[in-house]
Length: 426
Image 1: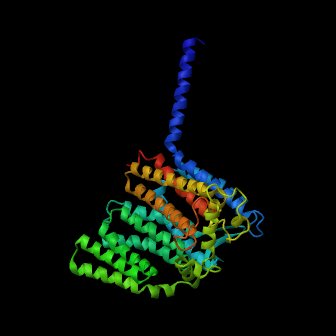
Image 2: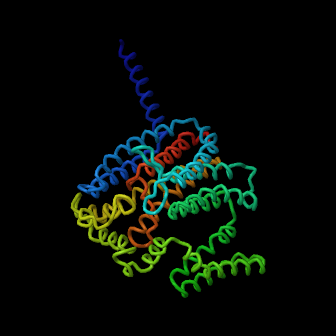
C-alpha cells in the first residue's frame, strides 16, 4: 500500500469517526442524561445510607439499583422507537391507565392510608405513576390537533374531562399529592396550548384566594385586593368582573367547608405546615426533623454514613419523600446545591429542546413532562425545608420507588425521542 493509499484510508476512517460522533450527539442530549445519572447516583448513595442496618428496609438499595438499570434500558428503548409510535399509543395508554386506576380501587394494596398499589407476586407498582404518561400524551394529542379552538368552552371542557377522570380516581384512593400534580400539569398544558391570560386568571384566582385564607383574615383580604386589581387591569365587562370577584370571595369563605372534607391526616399536615411546633411529635414531626437534618449538615456535611438524623432514623422512611434531607445532612450545603444545579440543568435543557420543536403535539408533550418533573421537584424540596405542607411526593430520580423511577425514565426517553427527530417534528 502506497503512502497516498494510506492517507486516503486514514481520511475515510476520520470521516466515519466524525459521522458516528455526530450521530450520537444528534440522538442524545448528554447534558440531560449526565445530570440524570448523577441524580440517580446521589439517590442510590442516600438510599444505601438511610437503609443501612434498617430492620424493615433491608434490600431497598439493591432493588433500587436493579430498577435503575432496568429503567435505563427502557429509556434507550423508547429513544429508538419510531416517532409515529407516540401518536399511535395515545388512546391505548390512556385506556390502560384508567383501567388500572379502576382496578386498584378494588384490588389494590393499602399503603399509608391510600389504596394505590397493585401487586403481582414480589413486584408492586403504582398505576397513578403510569397514568401520568397517559395524561400528558392525551392532553398533547387533543390540543395538538390544529382544528381545536383553545378558547372554546367545548374543547377546554373535553380536555378537563380527559384529565378529570384520572384525577377523580386518584382522589378516591385517596392520593392528594398525585392529584395536585395532575391538576398542575393539565392547567400548564392548557395555558401552553394558547389559552388567554385572562382565562388562566379566572381559573387560578379562586385557588389563590382559598390558599391565602389558610394564613388568616389579613392574607385573605390582601388576596382579594390583588384579584380586584387584576380585574381592573384586564378591563372586562363590569357584570362579569363582579361575578368573578364574588366567586373569589366565595372560594375563601368555603375553605372551612372544603377543609372538613379532607381526611384527618391531611388536615393535620396542613395545620403542621402553618405551625409545625403545634404538634412536634405528630403531624409536624417529619417536617421539623427534616429541617434539623439539613441544617446540621453545615457547608460540607457530616460525611457519607455519618449523619446522626439519618443513621439514628429520626425521620421514618427517609429514603422516599425526605431523601433530600439525607443528602443535606451527609453532603451538606454543597451537596444540596449540587442536586439543585443538576435539576436546573435538566429543566434548562428541556426548555432548549422545546424551543427547537415546532409541532404542537410534541411541544405540548415536552411542556407536560417539564411541568411534571418541576412540580415534583418544587413540592418535594419545599416540604423538606418547610415551605410546603407534607403531601407525599417523591423527588424524581432520587427517591426510592421503582415505578416512579421507571415512569420518569420513560418520560425522559420520550423527550430524547422527540430530540432525535426534532428536525422532522416541524
